[in-house]
Image (cartoon, rainbow, N blue to C red; front, side, top):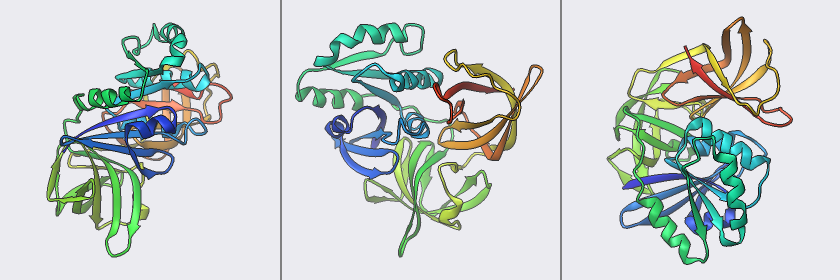
Length: 310
């Protein structure tokens, strides 16, 4: 079943208009199935208290939908995150909030969001039209087999079960795949999509996998499953494309956090003349995902900027 994944930044009441709620943690997953297509909505309900859920939602989605309710710091932070990630997306505006559109256009006129469409909701039937529009989108796929994991469970009688997204390639039951960053070979025992057992499945899809030769403790959102040989590092060298809104001065020894895909790793920032080093507390798996540096305890803007590897 073809799947379109949309990150939705907005009210739960609106998310429920787009799909039925299922898995819930710091992100809430909603599903809507029609005519053989699956629309998956990822709503980061743990944001803005924590920044990480926002990036979880953004990094597993094909498109981002931002609901405009008021002009505040969280909206600005979301726009900055989408700009660094170069997300495709739309703004969702209730007809009663149309007066905010000009202000939003001024906020985004120098960002990658300047060409985002504004969808005005006037009545309940407009949500049906919006869902049709979202389901018609083309999905973005990795050029190799890659699965990111967003939830891990121990299920009695089954063993280790994970929920995640197959971003590229194809997987089959009883297939061996490599778990990163451990570089450990594990087996996919079985595959489910929308609670239906499958022998194999192609990207892009949201999947439930039963896994063998690993424990739940070995798996987390820092895990990546792939058939490709991926590089793992604990020290990164490169340059920083710093946000103009991050006003703090970074110094050697500062503790920061790296977010890439669903990986969230504490790091130490080091700068020696023009060279910047990021020393990771845990191993980091290098994929095609952008590397974003954040400072969780910042009093104002938490997003530092994009780190570009040498």
